[in-house]
Length: 537
Image 1 (tube, rainbow, N blue to C red):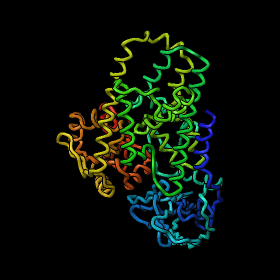
Image 2 (cartoon, rainbow, N blue to C red):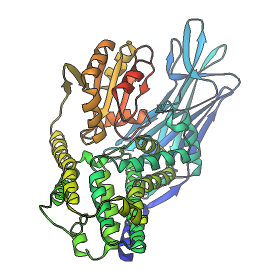
Image 3 (cartoon, rainbow, N blue to C red):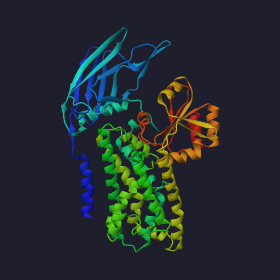
């Protein structure tokens, strides 16, 4: 068992072995009206790693500057980069502006502090580079208006080491995140403190156990544990080892997500299901589970693969591996609260990842672990072993079989691109950011369904609510234009759109009323009454 633990810890250590914390690089320019500070996440540059940048604007003596969209009159504040071949700028965000009203003239801008953030990403055999040039221009106004500009060169040391941002960057990034236009339910996710996000992650982890592709498997495993001889000490040890397997698996996932982010990738929970190879592996696993539940094949123990069969007598190893396997089968699912917590985490500094994913892991591990901690209580509740166990296994084989069919459909869908879909007489157009923005600007009500065929929650919501006759009538009465953002395969435009709403997973439902530029985000688990309430607000 200790060897297995050492191997798992070594795997986790390898994720961070090549990482080093770096200091921020800062340059500044000041006038009597505005101070501009350019800050980068590291003072070294790695040609395979993305570089995050912030530009902080501090206004003095009642001067103000304009937003990216200045409104009726004004000139937008601009940040221009001169980059070498092989780099591009992505994920541009601005602080939420305030309105300046003079009669019928409405302008959008900033009068105290504002932030611009972006990521400089290597895309195609980038040149080794030590210098990046940035030009920042703005129009400062009080009674009069004065155009100003700052040009600076950022000089870096070159390294091959994966770099992690230091304290100065993390502190400034935290302030910037609070000022951005990110929205979420029940409020701006950036406004939550870390403790609240961890509570949401823990709650989402508990609920994750009851998703249809997970609940049958873990329930049968839990029942099988307490139907045998009760050995409280051994069962508690196995429960702890199961929790350890779950926690380590989630931490490794967090480490992979962090490294992918450092490389400039935009990924979220369930990203691995965008790979047909991974979906194929999952399909094979669920087929084996289905055959086991139907008693058409027999493998001791139920949840061990080849390694488990070799060590069937070593129940501690089996418990540890069950924890790893439980996380694997959870990958297609997103539970309530979990989407907000994970979406928040993946936009935060690296130090936020591991507390949140640990809370998620502990919540997910808790229900199954309680069976091991209190086996006598569960044993008293359950009827004596008998034919009911065989019947229950076959009942639970049904959702597992449906999961297999669903994975076949996902695999097929990943090879077929659909530009639009229909349900009844409703037509869902493929998501197009520019088209959605134009329709919203013209005052049309728009509903956007961010979904994926590997997301079970998404499919349930679509079947029960979004493709129902009631929703169709509601859409027609409101003259809604419907868009489906299908994230089954990796799509940078959809990933960027999710990030703009503070999310990094699906489902996500956004409704623009058309009355103004605002929008509402609906809950992850839908009922028709909820949808009707949100849309009629």
